[in-house]
Amino acid sequence: MKENAKISNAVIKRLPRYRRYLRELQKKGVDKISSNEFSSLIGYTASQIRQDLKNFGGFGQQGYGYNVNGLYTEISAILGLDKEYKMIVIGAGNLGQAIANYTYYYKAGFVVSGIFEINPRLIGMRINDIQVFDYENLVDFVELNNIDIGIICTTKDNAQEVADRLSFAGVKGIWNFAPVDLEVPSHIALENVHISDSLHSLAYHINKSQHAKEEQENK
Amino acid sequence: MKENAKISNAVIKRLPRYRRYLRELQKKGVDKISSNEFSSLIGYTASQIRQDLKNFGGFGQQGYGYNVNGLYTEISAILGLDKEYKMIVIGAGNLGQAIANYTYYYKAGFVVSGIFEINPRLIGMRINDIQVFDYENLVDFVELNNIDIGIICTTKDNAQEVADRLSFAGVKGIWNFAPVDLEVPSHIALENVHISDSLHSLAYHINKSQHAKEEQENK
DNA sequence: TAGATTGTTAATCGATTAACAATC
DNA sequence: TAGATTGTTAATCGATTAACAATC
Image 1 (spheres, rainbow over the protein chains, first blue to last red):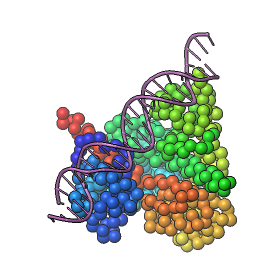
Image 2 (cartoon, rainbow over the protein chains, first blue to last red; image 1 turned 60 degrees about the horizontal axis):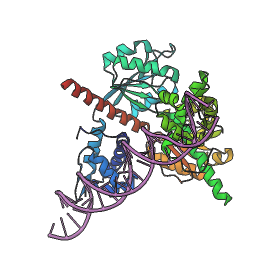
Image 3 (cartoon, rainbow over the protein chains, first blue to last red; image 1 turned 180 degrees about the vertical axis):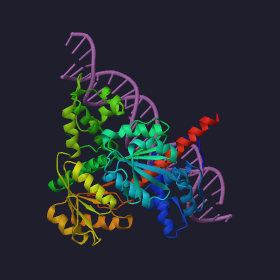
Image 4 (cartoon, rainbow over the protein chains, first blue to last red; image 1 turned 135 degrees about the vertical axis):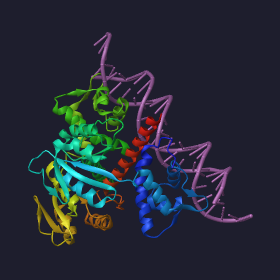
């Protein structure tokens, strides 16, 4: 794996998708695939697939294609999915609980060590197998347990304060579900899941389709 | 609002963000903003802001700037947020419940009319104020209640079947939370929230930061 | 070896940024 | 009117696609 040249974010965003398709191929027992075959499966051009993979080094073999198992392992390693991450969730509301459970049960390699809350009625509870702690103890907990990732599931008004505290405590990454854009120091990785923005894009496309449909009908 | 020329998806994806910032400005009682001021707030270049808005018609006034209330209303209308959408959730697991509640309580204009399940132990229950129905009755329900949007919160293995059924039933859009890429007819809007892909990108960026940090320390 | 398919360079396309004339 | 700031055209930048030589 080459570590030098800057990889564009567009490429990175495609990697998890490559990995998903490779996993499916693995399950089906396919052991090699050409960029052309992969293209018709995944919907990127063969050219793009080869360009993307080239960024990290040549994983293919001329005249043969790509080895499915090998490429899956490589992409997993590039994404850092061969490591384990310790996470905490901040905010024990609906979304916090769902994300905690989702990650806890379905994401191998991502361990949820606790949920943090300010609501005293929730502190001390267990949500499935995950303990709810007092938000006041967050910094100590992160330091003591070497937490890698903080998952923000608070309201938008509290999210920046939580991000500041997580940054101070020394997490390496923040996964933000609150509908705001957070400011974090540049050495901390930040990934947003703006659910609400996604819904609003959907609304736009629904109306766009309707317009197109109506135009069609008026002809 | 101009309805002709094709607007690129990059522009559409920025609209909800513009809207969020305009809402905050509104709350603060700001009534006008120039593209330059807006730029330093939102982090897009002033040029880009003017280009983006130009796509939909000139909302600004030379020598003055943009009217905050007016622009908020315009962008809301462009996104179709002046309408009401009827939605159903498919899958009453953790994520389905969370998304149902989130949308039901916090998203004005998006009404959740029910959750659909195959698990007989959940059918007939109420989750907060939302009724859980039998998945077998989905098509009739969509037709009878003019459901606009189906929210897929099933496992990845069931997601395509659900998408097919929703498409057949006549929804206008699908909001997909299952970690697969769905095939839907082109007249149906599809928006994916690939939570898992987002987590994997985060893992990549965490490791990238770590590499950079170590290189720094070795110097 | 011949055929297939990658790795890589070159061409194209689209999106972002810069510049400035129009105009409030 | 003069100053400010948009709307819009032109220049730049980056990402995608096409082409083909290298090589398995």
